[in-house]
Image (cartoon, rainbow, N blue to C red):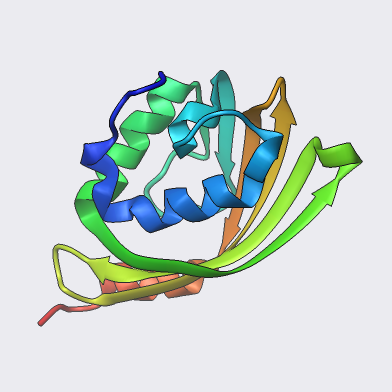
Amino acid sequence: MPGQTYAEFESIAPYFDLARGALGDLVDGEHFFDVVDENTIYEVLYDLGWPRIIRGRTALMAAFRGYAKSIALHAADHLVTHKADDGRVVVIEYEVHGTILATGVAYENRFCSIIRLENRRIAHWRDYMDSHAAWNALNARGH
């Protein structure tokens, strides 16, 4: 994975930069996908088009390819980081700001993610978000 480029994910880079930055020196690798374990479990506790559970780095990258084609993020901020279990668990709270590409509608959302690390990689990610904000943005009529 070192040296791999992730140009196809550029439209959502602020999310990846925030998440990678939040993990700091607890993990090894430059990009978010560099620090994801091959057998990771990415769990979302909302029903808005994503599978509830994504298993493996390859499947996670495929899911994010679709996200990158539908949303352009211009910022991810308001990061609050909580470390637990001697750095094996990291909880991050944050916001993302962008645009739904199909409609031009603004997308603003808040998240809380619980991340379990093993062997300096993301082994499990559990995601909570403001489902109402996402629903409104995804169902609004564009310009």
